[in-house]
Length: 624
Image (cartoon, rainbow, N blue to C red; front, side):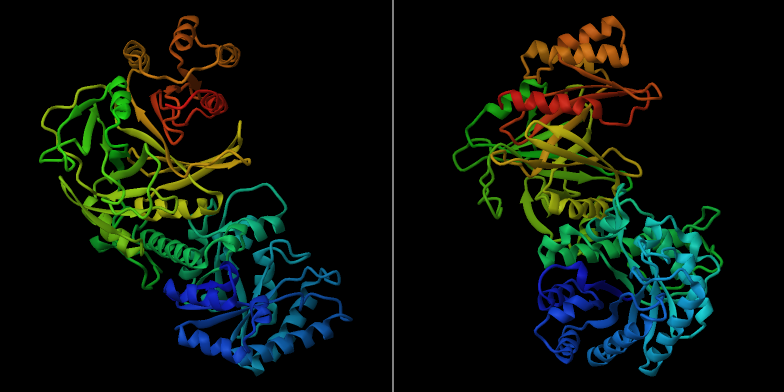
């Protein structure tokens, strides 16, 4: 199906927007009226430029406050519509979006609204135009999809249909069921936007906080799927109003938008390839009415994604990181093959503690062909593995993610980079060991990534499209230096979870971008804490008042409370009785920290109640 995007969803001048949209391989655009009015180009020049870039103009939008008005006001608004139809002639556009009224002279009269829409529809038909009537979620009287559907039925003109806008529908509680029984020919256009769940005025929500599909919490897939199942075969077009996209680089936004739309098509494919009896279409089962449309078909995301190993860039000749991990119980082991710098020092040291593997890399950023030198130590790369390792690189290529290739002692390594700058190794081989790995640490439970506010939605898209992680709710915490918002991304199955940390700090408090947390699982945290204390490992101190509060809140057994207090272990319990025990290191070089945790009884959270204590203690504790 044809892929489009509204020019309002991209920052910059109209010329820059069109170039960015074309570079991201969109098929078409929705031209926003304000972009045309503000452009120094004549409408004919805009049409010519779109044609040069291979972009069809699928929609001119929007016609505001034209129908549903008092009889005294309507003639002047009809004059306005006629003027915009002449503009559309010059642009070569043949379809217009007409919104429900928010005008002071709007009336609560569906019959009158239908009469006026019919008049405008007749004028549009003289030009060969189609009208898509849309219920704005904040429309004065028409703000629900069933209202526009009823009004369009009253009009009964072949060139007047409904606009299916996922944001306006879902924001008002209208899901896929609102399209039940609707003939696809009556759908004039489909506009797609997601959004985070926010409690605020719907107009403010719409204008400032929309996002591309898959980045928010709305069930966009079901509404778009229902429209296609009804018979709609027109463009699938993105329309996102957002403060973030207004400030972001237009080419970055356009590429991110295309990936989101491709991922939506992948979701639709999965939806239609799983019949109700659980068998697949490959087994010869067809679902009645399943739409026959061509959809994006990339290699699948890993079903059980996990982290094979983490690479930390360290300063050559500085033993501090090796000493830190040794105190944490890691043992240095040797990968196969030589791996030294030019004067015989180890350039890469592989460390293991049970199932946890860390590689300390002392090679220079120039040698590794990194675009910029990073402050050391820092987490330089994360190797993602799973059941479909061999296809992960092909999946990255399919989503137009930049992939680089390097050579390591273990073989060829393909990698890409997230919007936050995290280097992700794509199914790269884990360093092979000459000796068994001692220790009792488990695999990486979750990964924390610090990200700028204006790249947070793009970071969600990256992990969702490449690895298949699903975004969860947003939590907010008070940080001694400002404010912290966290968002969890989880797989359908598997061990890899990602926590995005969006920090808003005041002046003088730098925000580090990239991996800032390595959280490893274990099965007996208190025993591990005793071992760490005996080895002199640096553990983040917890204030005594925390344990007094813990006794008041959750009332753990006195002997457990005393042991938690002595070992600086934090504790949480959920409503089902599941428990979390966890401890932290201080910040390492101000860039990242390590968490060791134990989940009991199906606990699935992250100890949110303890986060303010951890943030305050890290702020007060000297860096390692």
